[in-house]
Amino acid sequence: MSATKQQKSAKDVPYELIYWPGIPGRGEFIRLALEEGGADYTDTAHTGKGMDETLVQIDGKNIGDDNNPPPLAPPILRHGDLLISQTPNILLYLGPRLGLVPPAEGEDGDPDAIYRINALTLTALDGLSNEVHDCHHPIASSLYYEDQKEESLRKSRDFVKNRLPKFLGYFERVLTGKASGDGPWLYGGRLTYADLVLFQVVDGVKFAFPKAMSAAQTSGKYVLVFRLYDAVKTRPKIKEYLASKRRQSYSQGIYRYYPELDLTETDTPQPVQ
Ligand SMILES: N[C@@H](CCC(=O)N[C@@H](CS)C(=O)NCC(=O)O)C(=O)O
Image (cartoon, rainbow, N blue to C red; front, side):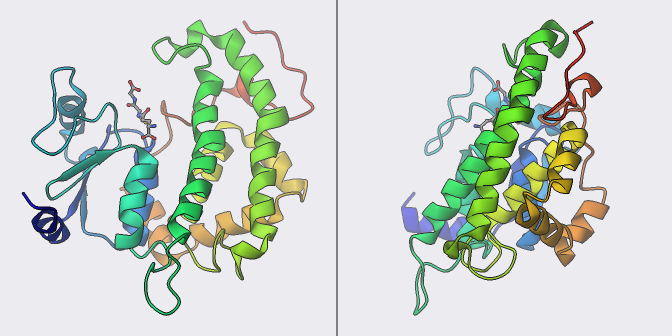
């Protein structure tokens, strides 16, 4: 199939998000973009067959199809003939289609914007999503948390003391910089998908580390980060989505609440039981 034909057929059909049911997980970054962009989409979290549909995709025997290699892990997006994985890659695809990046062409076109927005997205996912996952699974994803509690405590202590302030401080600097433009947004004075990602990672870290995030907020060091968080949360479509059943609760995904890991920068953690 030619590239032109493939793109045309892809445009006319709903987006399909394939992801584990029962947790917001990394699927949430995709959902927020689809919701804010007002997209027509389906979500395996709500089909009753989400587990099977995801397992089929990541099955060790799946070799993909004529055009698409098999994905290793969800989230996965199908759009017409296209099937792609990797959260920031999916956002790269959706951003221009859903109006979540500045237009590349035209008089005020900003063709480089998407690479800057992608860098902000990757940074937020590195420090405030992937590293948060490693706080409860520092040794191996294949082991239970209970089998790596001591290391989790060490990792969480370092996260709260060093990594969390580093990443929150980084985004505060971005928001102070000229490239962020006017208003609460990270880039170019307008909402982009990087803002949705920053909202979601802050929301997840608030769930996992409520004490540390409360201390971060009252410190006054990250006023612009929390202003952006509130600005995303109160956007009409996001507000409606967050109040709907489509928004799933945090549980055993990336963002988990373990009281013993909920430290502040100055806490002396209790020995692991
Ligand atoms: N870098 C990938 C990570 C994907 C990933 O780890 N997905 C999780 C769910 S959030 C999963 O099911 N992983 C299975 C595995 O790694 O074996 C992304 O950003 O999409």
